[in-house]
Length: 255
Ligand code: 6PG
Image (cartoon, rainbow, N blue to C red; front, side, top):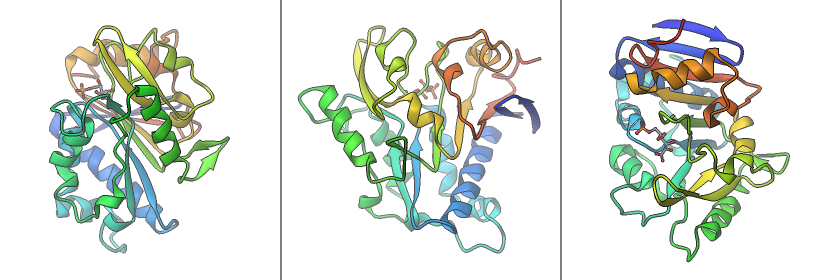
């Protein structure tokens, strides 16, 4: 693994997507185990998309969680973790493109947790806006700062257009500063989404982004090295920094 630092960005470059996904799972495991010693509950906002599937599957591998956690610690604190989502498609929870369904199939259905530890984004309201509001109400149970929820860990992906969660370029949601969640209509996908907003991403205790594949190399280099970039993921400003778990293909344009 090669590490590069660029201001708030800590970039970890792995030889392959598989190595990236194992490392990201180990990092998530180590952070959660450490946090679980300080707090009763540990809150994670899971990423949607396809890249995280391998990360989530790794979380079920006991050897990984043992290696990830401090040797003197107890086992991975499954029962202390609350699972939320960074964003969701405005579709039924059993729809093929539901992030909740993806996470359930990847690991939540097999993890030693109870269903009340998982908080799917509501998607059964008449309007997506109402779903976003209901999700915001669920987030009010978390630690708050500036009237916004503080997640212990937010895991994100990035699209080749520089979107993250459902913060897509040239949409109203990227300017939302007063609400923790919002609904957004994504013209190019012709679909409604519900997403966490920048104020929440910016104050997560740990924020990590998964980037795999050649098709994301240009946007990653733009975000990490060319600060003129204004794509959404480049607009995260987290005082705790941002961890980037990337593979060689995605890092191919970093200098
Ligand atoms: C989603 C995600 C989205 C995703 C990126 C990357 O709901 O799709 O929140 O932001 O992380 O689109 O997706 P891939 O991992 O599939 O490339």
